[in-house]
Image 1 (cartoon, rainbow, N blue to C red):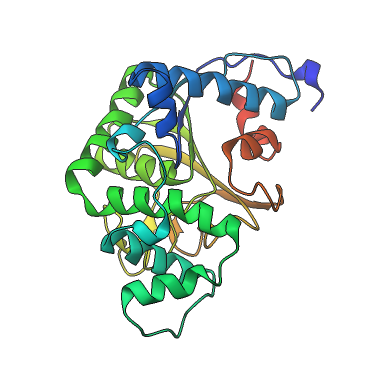
Image 2 (cartoon, one colour):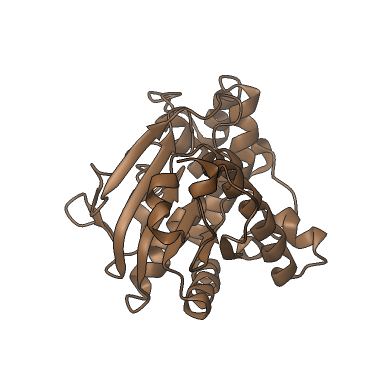
Length: 278
């Protein structure tokens, strides 16, 4: 669709961010509101570029929760991760087909895996594994993250939720835990929801007979993943969840395969947002 045919958003979208966003909190002087607003402005720019129109206030808010998962302000090197984090790292690496038959001790396995991953994957793991481990294994942190997202959804009452990366897990669980929160459209980007032995089996509510399901308050679910996104394994969710109405495999950038900037800017979500644009 040509730029002049895009209008402004009629009802604000709520975003739910992914991994590695604690630095926003620090730069905002440890202000959750400041971090959320800085992210909102960026997400607006990214989406405006993807829509091909003038800058607009598309996002009402980006629900911010990273401060509940990170106490240090920087990514941990894989070698210095605790046992729980290293277990996530090992299980994630096996999704890439690395070390599937290795049977050594955890620490030895972690070191062995690092020699076989490229620097891009190792840097990603330093962000991904600690935050995923913190969310999935610490009940108090998990509840606080979901509480932050639920509060924003209740206050903003959006028709559209766009959730990226780990944020898709937080949004999925939050919407299940609060079935009275209703949204017309849930868009998941670069989602690890279906990642076996890392995320999928640990979801709340737990999958039944090998299947999760669309939250009851969500009318439509769209999933989009890049073919090289090492967080979105598997990229498609329909084999693991009922109620995924549409999904697409995209080709963003083999060097920049997971950022929300690439996902919002690639144009793949435009057709799904069009009904919510005036």
